[in-house]
Length: 302
Image 1 (tube, rainbow, N blue to C red):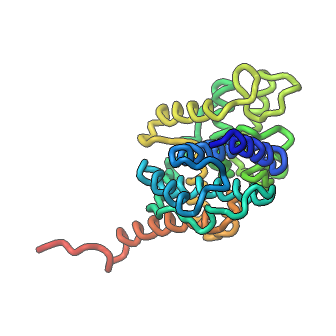
Image 2: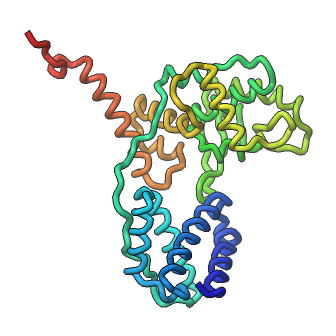
Image 3: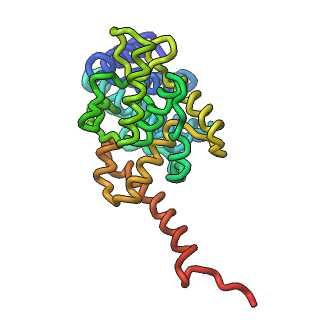
């Protein structure tokens, strides 16, 4: 593509960061997806964004599908392209949005992996024998108690914790702020950690979770610590931070049946995203039925 086409991309990313204030991770995803589209255009001999047609967008989608990308990943790439063209339309650089009406191939929706209530309890019940173990117990309890995303956990600051009220204020996707309840066990673990935390950091650091060096704990460090504790607790399954979020949602829905409340606590913009947990709940109920109901049990052969 011509150099001006790249300049339009750069101005679009400035628009996303400065005007729409999207997170750095979202910007990374947009940049990757649109770079893939630009590479496809270069191979196809498309010199600028105004030359890209709907048929060529479908060709790009087909190329992504042949490379093995899932329907969800292709849908995300299409969404990035549509958003980019809405920006180009606003700036009067193009006359139409060629990505409008193009859909990604459907893929089987995989149910998220969850822990059982007993497994989750075993994982988060740590002996806090040192400050770092107290920290890990607090962050694991908070992940499971409140269903936070990993990014929400590592970006959490001290003023956003209200242990007296039993709540935490988090900033989720799209910079949407929500207040989430914090359970009694998590509040207890957080109080213990805040005492230990004072030994590791000075007054200038506001992060709730910090490293041994007194700086904000990173996402990869949380993942590594969680994997280490999962092995020590002999979980027997791969465990990652999002699994605790899935487990929180599944267990809460199973006990309450309140889909709207779970949606609000997870910070889902669409209730259809939350409805995936109704399938998990149904699987649990179906398993109970198969084991317990006299008309479900298979008859033994004579």
